[in-house]
Image (cartoon, helix red, strand yellow):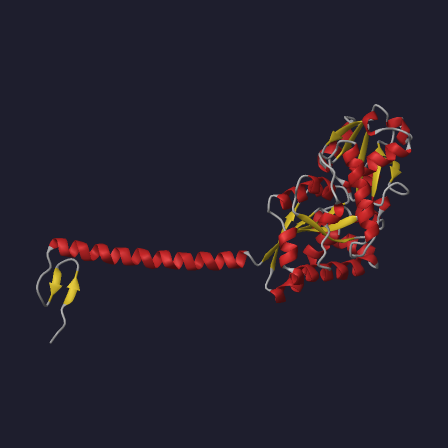
Length: 341
């Protein structure tokens, strides 16, 4: 017996003809089934995308240094590939902005100077110190224009000083003033990100500029900015590798791979400053001589956080609280990764 065939345009072919209502009902059920299948596929694809997105390390960097070399070389991607992780890079103008992104859940790992994590911890950011670089006190300075009548830090009294609020040079300014017998309240801080501060500095809108490399080296070479003081004998100026707490605690193998990649590129750069400067110049568009000067002042290595480093950070935190720069006292030890590196 030949089985009847359904034709939705005309009912049953080879059998009893369907009514219009039956045809409509059949079509409705067929359409519902199609929608259900598409929805199910969408859920599966969405789930797969979510799983893929969870296997990404979101790394924050600034326009300079180890992370920029890692990014240009693809070294970190190679280290993380066996672990099933990709890398998403985001550039920031300074450490405070980088840690703000970490605080709102937009970043997993980054590098900043010594002051930004103090401000971020005081603001409740879920950060942890993972490792640090050795002190590099020459890599930050307080600059004045080449023709400025200011020749000492003591002469900054009543003057406008540009700086990136909450950055490493914030502490340099505080301690340099203290060494010169001045208080932080004796100057007028003008909070500007580096690019805006450079413009204000050149136009004479500020009297001095507290800044770090490579912006420091660029101002020294391009406009012959004069150094009132650098960090030597005043501050340590360390760089810290910081992570979002849950990410660090949940992914120790990824953190280890990150630190291995950092150490490898540091080892190469420390013995190849000129080559590193040339390589970075092609990426960031900063002249190689500027980068060579800046890189020559760097301290290349990555190390576990030690009690001495924690003590130095605690002193910074206590200083900032005493000046009313952070809203509450903090205990730096609470933000140190205890899982080892």
